[in-house]
Length: 207
Ligand code: 3PG
Image (cartoon, rainbow, N blue to C red; front, side, top):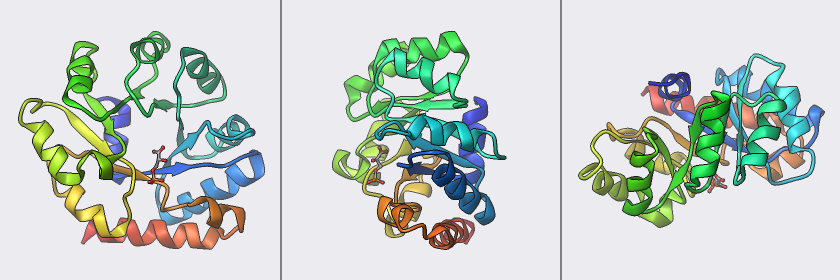
C-alpha cells in the first residue's frame, strides 16, 4: 500500500474540488479539516487552481492535483505542492512522470483494456471514472473477477445515496466526488455547508 492508499483507506472519501485562488482554496481546506477529513483533490480545470492547491498544501491537508492529463501538468502540480496526482484516464507518460518524481498516482480506468495497461504499468489502485456511467458497483464487481488485486476509487455521479453500495465492496478503497464541495456551494462561500456535507458522509461511513 502506498501512503496515498493508506490515507484513502482511512478517510474513504476523496473530495474533488474545483477551486481558484489561495483564499478560496484555504477556506475549503479549513471546512474539510473542521469536518475531520484531511484529504482533497484540486482539479486543474480553472485558472487559479494551482494557486489554490499551493495554499491548501501549506495547511494540514494532504492535497493532490486532479484532471492531470500531461506530464508537464504533473511537474507543475508537484512544484505547487501536490502530494499525489489523479488523472481521468490512463496515460503511461503521466504515470511514468509521477514515478520519476516519486509521487503517488491514481489514474482513471473505464474498461478491462485500461486495467490491463494499468497492470502492465504496475499500478495497483485506479480511479474508476465516470463510475456511474461505467456501470456503478456492478462494474467494480465485474472488474474484480479478472483483476482480483486491483483497488478502485470510483468517482463520477456519486452522492450520499451511492456511498454504501460502493464502500461495502472489498475492492473499493474510497470514493471520490464533487458533492462534498460542489462549485455552487464554493461560489456562494458556504464553508459551513461543506463541513456539514463532509461530516454527514463520514458519519454515514462509520455507521
Ligand atoms: C472528477 O473529475 O472526478 C469528476 O468531475 C467528479 O465527478 P462528480 O462531479 O460527478 O462527483
